[in-house]
Length: 288
Image (tube, rainbow, N blue to C red; front, side):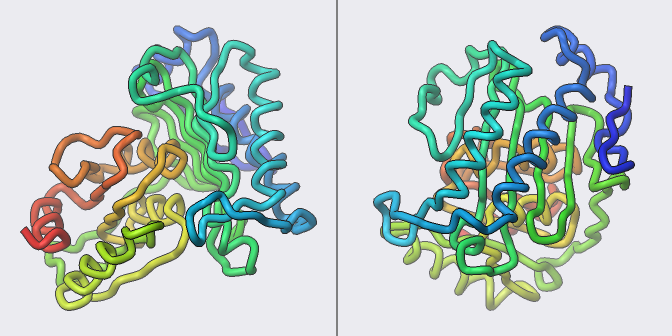
């Protein structure tokens, strides 16, 4: 079974490994991805109307939430809960009921960022996305990212690769020297910008270019698909990586925390790079 929307094949063939994992939950891989995609498109209708821009602070300076974030999240949850009544959610604008300690105990968790890049969205800066990741007992099994600016849909399944619209993606980044790399990062909150500035100063002197999109989700997607070579951030949240981490893995990127350990969805500090550049990028970024 292959799902299509707007005449576009969104998920491609599902690998045996992915199919077995998902069928154990009584659903096909394409059905899971199609349900998540439907939810993302329905949420996008709310967000792209730009009728819900009223915002308030979430406590940290610069960290805002709009009414569109809240309405988008509710729509996604309503759709997915109706289809998968036993699922649980880890969503940015809701009180967390899942923690690092019990995350892996749940059969189906949807990790949701209803608008990643909220400040960009509110002020019309072209970089924001809707992100939905499906996790099975602590492992990512399906992912959907909707690029709100370019109207692109990215999907992934375990072993099934990454599909952008109708095209199967391949990371074509052939950079072997960091001096020819494009590196990306993002600003955190509270005192973390000071740390980010130190990292950016080191990168600026040693890579071809440094970019900051203001949407961690799109930055990670672009790293997965090869527009960016490397990525580093010091205040990631589960919602930022809930979908993108599977895309990074599927396209061969190495994803770790700052200690070089395999990345956990609850790790704040993340480093992404091609395997052959990962150690060098870590040393350069962290000054070690």
